[in-house]
Length: 224
Image (cartoon, rainbow, N blue to C red):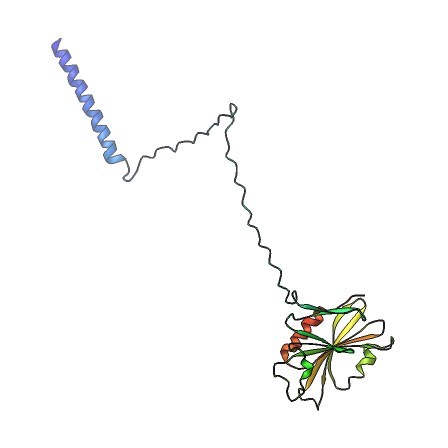
């Protein structure tokens, strides 16, 4: 009996040694080098909120994209906003002139100038920086047209439309005078349907005063 138990024990030990040897052979000779056991990625579990019904899964809301407001460009400053207003009720028109200029009323014509009482100067004593614009008003034939008026400018260099309102047009003109010390002369003439002729005439010919005349004419309008 003891011999049988001893034999069984030996057999079990032999089997155990064979199994361990087989496992060792597998790991040493059969498994590829560099292989790493990868753990399975866990599936995220949907989160339920306190208000969720059974079987419902809370879904986070998609954020609404924020719109960036486009800045509105500021309107360009009006350079004539604070200018003084020259108004003529007899002929029914008005125009603006610089707030630091002066107005002289002379009856058939008026003067706006950067010097007060500019007419006191003669040709020999005129200040070099004096600028002036003469405004004349005349009654003409109601049949007067720009074509017929154009003929009176024998020395006309340029004749351009600058205004068109209330069925009235204005012409900006440039003339040349051989005997005038400043050469080219610029002005503007306006005819209305009532037989009135309104003229803006430059007293000097600098480029600055020409630009200023353009600004003054841009404010011209009829009032009746």
